[in-house]
Amino acid sequence: TRFITVSAGGEFEATIGALHDAADKHGMVILGDLNEETRLQAVGVQSQRAHSFFIGDPRIGKTLFGTSQAIGAVVPVRV
Image 1: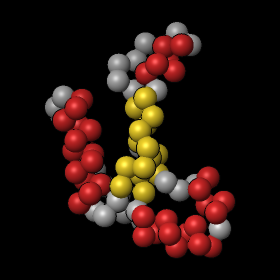
Image 2: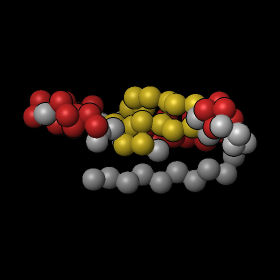
Image 3: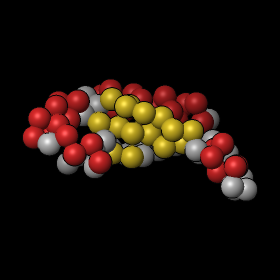
Image 4: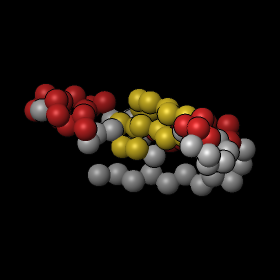
């Protein structure tokens, strides 16, 4: 297991760019980007730019899915 840390000291768009760059640098991909801001607003929670990113290593995913497709409930990692 690898943990990647990226400090977010800039604008939101720059932070997302840094996340993409870090994933690419470590052979991983952003598999999904869920904009949670609209979902939170629908229940009365005010949150600016709330996103969840689903990140995975396609090489590891291929091996895991070859063993059991149920692994999709665990992998990819949510950030």
